[in-house]
Amino acid sequence: MIGFFGGSFDPVHYGHLKTAVAIKKELAIDELFLLPCKEPVHKNDLHFSNKQRLEMLNLALVEFDELQIDSREMDRKSASWTIDTLKEIKANYPNKKIFLIIGADSFATLNTWKDHQQLGKYAQLVVLPRANSVQDARKNSTVYFAKTPLIDISSTQIRSILKGKMCDNLTGLLPDSLINYIKKI
Ligand code: ATP
Image 1 (cartoon, rainbow, N blue to C red):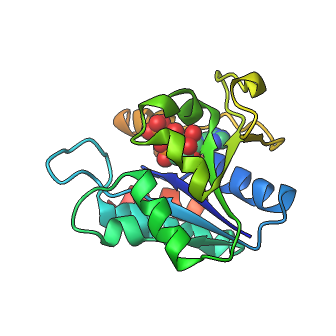
Image 2: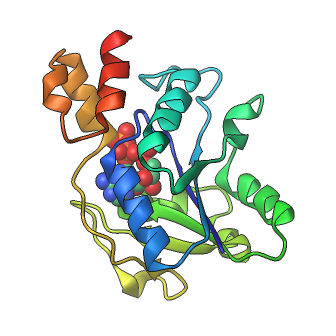
């Protein structure tokens, strides 16, 4: 069994890392990959560059060595849809059960994703609880609603602290190695 936890990780934080470890354990997933998306070529939406986001993920995994990184979306020339990535992953691992892990806030907007009805063909969808989002099991019986702890941290929160240039307030939100990395940028 393998799991993929996609996101922009701009930057990665304990909300991603600790829940990833928790869901890996909860579902006895053998390998869990963080799957960073590529910044759209013509957009400048993200705070950190592709290279910086990947470097921070690699630094984080020194502490969280039971997690892995799948950089296939970053390695592509342009940004890609989750459904296309999943099809590719399924082709790579035809005999493995595949989990696609998303937070409850992402699940709430799933109907805007390209070919979202098809996602279940390629992976079992797993939804993590998230602060201020409903975990509504009635919406979809094919989805697994995780019992992972609620960790109220977001990349938005970290980026707004950075705008105020108060790096000391980042303690406890992401690993110290990442705080040091960010301070040097
Ligand atoms: P932003 O604040 O920029 O929207 P984010 O903190 O939500 O970022 P993303 O990289 O966009 O982080 O999230 C990737 C995936 O991880 C999404 O499915 C999101 O729902 C989930 N996620 C993010 N933070 C948490 C958290 N604290 N607990 C559980 N899931 C989370």
